[in-house]
Length: 111
Image 1: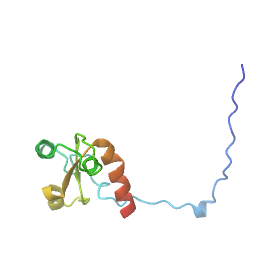
Image 2 (image 1 turned 180 degrees about the horizontal axis):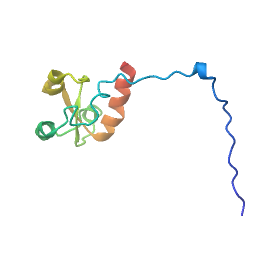
Image 3 (image 1 turned 90 degrees about the vertical axis):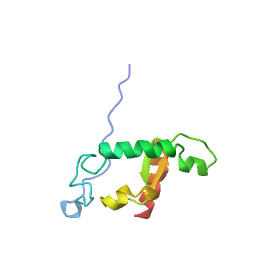
Image 4 (image 1 turned 180 degrees about the vertical axis):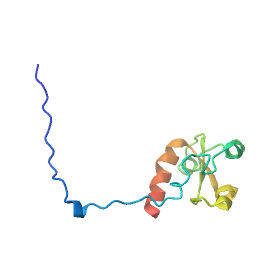
């Protein structure tokens, strides 16, 4: 029986002067739990009502597919702004794959 050998690291450690540490400046950093960020019982009830009246993923619909939505997404990121958070004209129904894939790529490209 042949044993696999561990490969040695090929990258050298960068000098300390070149390493920069970035601190998080996200609005989320001070509010750790989802309920502290507004996703509490009130949100769950509003989310359920919205999904009941908007049951299909809007991204899939645009692509000609019919997929049940499971996520209520904020079209424009609210970043802790309660008025924008509760503005239902800023909500859209998405399926989980579209929310964690396509939507995240769109937001990353806008930054």
